[in-house]
Structures are given as structure tokens and as C-alpha cells.
Amino acid sequence: MSIKTSRLKTTSLLVFLYSLQGLIIGLLLETLQIQLKHDFSYSELGVFLLCSYPFSLKILWSPIVDSYYFTKIGRRKTWVMITQSLAVKILFYMSSNIDDILQEKRIYFLSVLCFLLMFIISTQDIAVDGWALTLCGQEVLNNF
Image 1 (cartoon, rainbow, N blue to C red):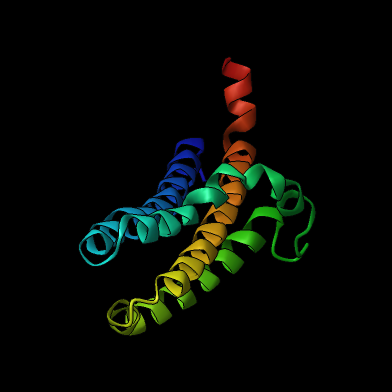
Image 2 (image 1 turned 180 degrees about the horizontal axis):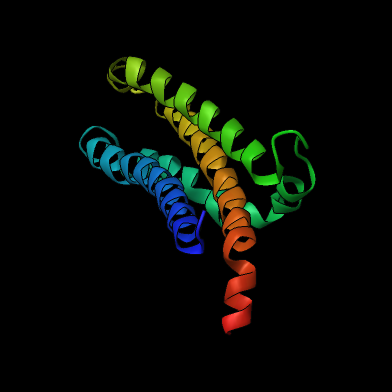
């Protein structure tokens, strides 16, 4: 495999993983927030927006993500696989039950689900950032 093919695969993989994160965050914080503005008060909307905190605080658990992994799978792939599977499960549950949650005005339950999802996605972001540094880091440092 040539160096250009390897770089293209690496870049494509990183773009794909970052796009998955962005898609979930966009759907969660923007689209759902627009729906909630019509049905809930500002204080309830404020409670919902607390679900964005995991991205601000991800530095607190990033050492755990960097330290613990399955050696057979790999340092970064372990966390990407775990976080993707958990995110899919939560998103599937939310897609099946979102109408009931909104009709029953269960904003606290929705906020907890979204907080968990954001925690999972921010954990994936830690792993993908580390993976990007591992894959591209030495080359970037040499060119800097």
C-alpha cells in the first residue's frame, strides 16, 4: 500500500468518525431543541441544555480513555467501538419512544438520556482525537 493510499484511508476514516459525532450533536442539540422550544418553558429548556456539559468537561475522564483498553482491539478502536454501540442503542431507544416522551412532557428523563448520549459522544471524541494524533501526529510534528 502506498503512502498516498494510506493517507487517504486515514483521512477518510477520521472524517467519517468526526461526521458521526457532529451528526448526533447536531440532531441532539439543535433539532431537538427547536422542537422543545414550542412545548416547554425556558426553565425546562435550560435543564435540557445541561446535557451539553460533557463536552466541556471531557478533560476529566480523558486519562481513563487513554489508559484502559483491550490490547487485542487497540487503544483507540476499543473506545470507538464501545461508544458507537452504546450511542446506537440510545438513539434507537429515543427514536422509538420520543413521541411518548414529548407528549408526556418528561423533560428530565429526556435530559438524562441526552446527557448520557453526549457523555458517550464526548468519550468517542477523546478516542478519535487521540487516534488522529497517533495516525497523523508524527508527520505533523515533522512538518511543523
